[in-house]
Length: 144
Figure 1 (tube, rainbow, N blue to C red):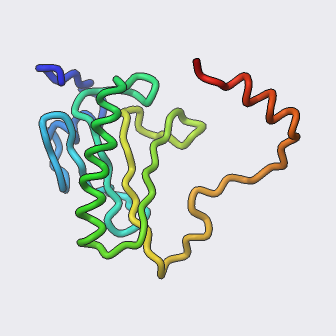
Figure 2 (figure 1 turned 180 degrees about the vertical axis):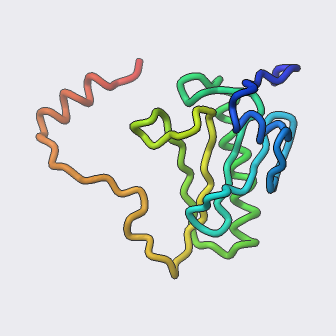
Figure 3 (figure 1 turned 30 degrees about the vertical axis):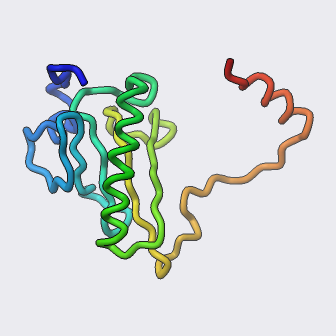
């Protein structure tokens, strides 16, 4: 981690992540703060916030991204025991069209419970893919 925090004074998540605004914090280290979401999708919904400012997955350093996932895993393992939930969604939006409303990278940790209506979780309309078009798309998307 870098020695100094790179934050934006006009970014609400920078202020929350760095303790400038009080939060319901469930985990903190030198690089991240995990807070309870103030508009939770389910009981126990939390956010992993890096203390440094990165607008989205395109900006965040790959090593920092990896550590964010590790923090999420640590929190989820503990929270699953405490909450008694049966599953978890990790959600991370990038860009307004993808549902990102605050342009500071953050990872949602959303507990899921068997007694809830989970039928609409992360549903996108399914489409039929033409086999040849799918193969061509696959070729164009291959990462070297």
